[in-house]
Length: 252
Length: 352
Image (cartoon, rainbow over all chains, first blue to last red; front, side):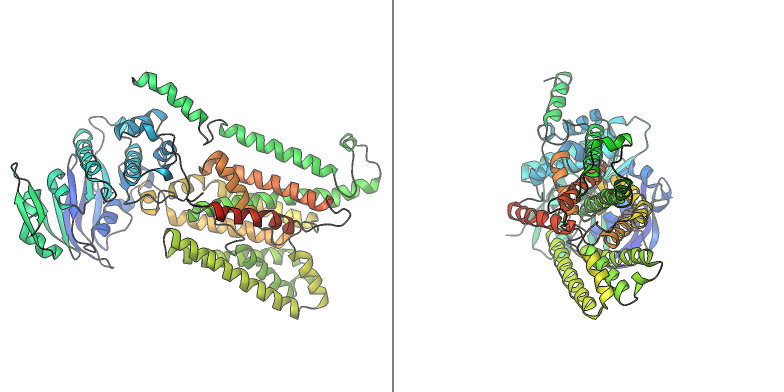
């Protein structure tokens, strides 16, 4: 399990220390205005940056003490955009960073509905396709095809995976993430801009404001209209849908 | 379609794809190695003193022919192979490091930085006169290349994507211009003997390769090549972007240090020994990437072999085209590579 123990970051963009953890099987949404520290938090969670205070631990061991290869099999990251210098074939790209066999790669491609693109160059893909390729790659890195009941919990971190997608692709992607979390006991943390996607698909939401985590909990607890209006400096109303999940709208 | 039926089809698709399916990696490297060997054989026979294949049986026409071959032609051939391999290999590695197909030791100013350092060494410190002249020249080349490498790298780190490319190319332009001007100053204040040394070295020629120079290359270049080869997996991972690559287990700062050091060592040596030989580092990896795909585990060794092949051929042409006179081989590669680079820029819409 990935835990933050009073972990904070002092240099800009700063993050005030707090403690919490990512729970296997749970899809966590990290929301907040631009510059609130979402990306800093994600880089702390992946171990790219080391916290100035406190610690970020996986199974009780601080991330920087982990062997990098062993850690790579336990947590993977999907960046916001795919910036390639060269035209990699999708199949090779998906296999990058893992010892995945061709069958594993095929499985990941199937899971993300990418078989049609397998032999194509990744530079010709649309934003949504490229995003799916990067998720497939991350799943290969985590060795999801080989997970068993008692394999240790793994962590998948995503930075705004829906920003380049149309509304249908957004929905399919969020459904897939939620399913992956549940079926593979994956702890997923996902930076999201779209509050309604967070409301509909996340199990839990962290709300960040100016480097502080000001709220955490189930979507209907955190995504409160008045708080959001203040944090985002926007005129918003949050309604309640039939199933109780919040729906955030621009005020008329 | 069931999974079992779909699999063979995928394999066929992979085999007919342009990304190397047709040639398994081992065979590609074998073909290139054989081509290098063949070129070495042909090059060893041809020149202003042509030799028949009978010499392989030990039938040298005159003792002088053997002496010329052993003392002049053989070290020169070996030097051509090593310098070609180093320049093309470091081109491929730098392109991977900058994630950019236009990175090249000459374009980014590495070679001219090394060249300037060598010129300073020859003129200001009168280094060529001393008994350790050649080794001082190596060191000067290495330090010059390293300095430019670090500078260019610091500049390239500050931006992303297209902007970084412009900054890098402009920095390369500035460094090349500056080094050219400083080189001019050095030539201006040089004594007659130093001037001769400078111009002998500066045209990009392998013609003064003797065993002393080739031995330096034999000692310095193979470790640099080996070092670069060991960076292949890291360079592959780096293509994912630094944050993702870190999460996939890459120690990016270490990889960068390694590539920068190996490149500076290798390119510095090459420049110190053979002057500035342009465009090899751009041309060879680019052509091979179209053929083999961008994976560095195949691209790096293939580029090294391809660079060796190209420079052996170019040097043989330089020796024989205007025989008994000689065209500096750096001139030849620039004449070939310059138009190719322009064509590359013209047709470039997506990164190639």
